[in-house]
Image 1 (cartoon, helix red, strand yellow):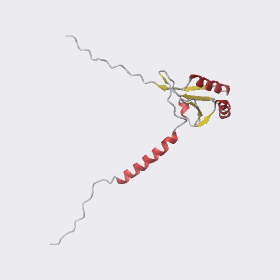
Image 2: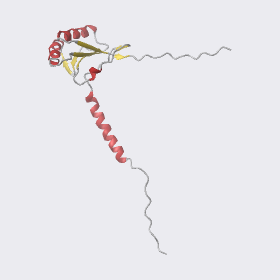
Image 3: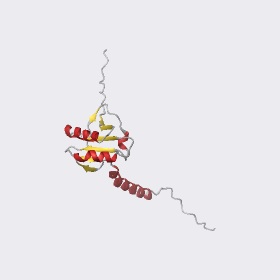
Image 4: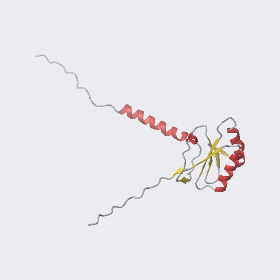
Amino acid sequence: MAYKLKAPETVADINVTPMVDVMLVLLIIFMVITPMLQHGVSVRLAQAQNSNPMPGAQKTNAVLIAVTRDGKLFLGTSPVRMSQITTKVRNRLATRINKVVYIKSDARAKYGEVTSVVDAIRAAGVEQLGLLTEQVQQRRPIAAAIPASP
């Protein structure tokens, strides 16, 4: 009798090593890029129950002024002094039709500093001014189970 050689059995397992390598590279890329995507300076916004969404503030060309807790001012991501706000805002809005400036102020910033920023922006000829706030999530009260009377 002749002996017939058999082909080796096929392997039905999926090799996930290349997929894991690609996923780790993508994870590292996103971890490096994400901090660069931040628009403006981070501040803890004041909370409001009836805030209006302002999608224009998320645009890359939006004029955004941040007032931090310790009174520092930022136009976009660059620091600016109070005396420079009017001229810098006027220069940024010179060629635009829609003159909108957004202010995001820290909830713990002094009220007088924020009003001074608003006055300086109005002096630059701004037609519309948006004050960014954070929407408060209202909690619904949990209904207590009331036992039925016998």
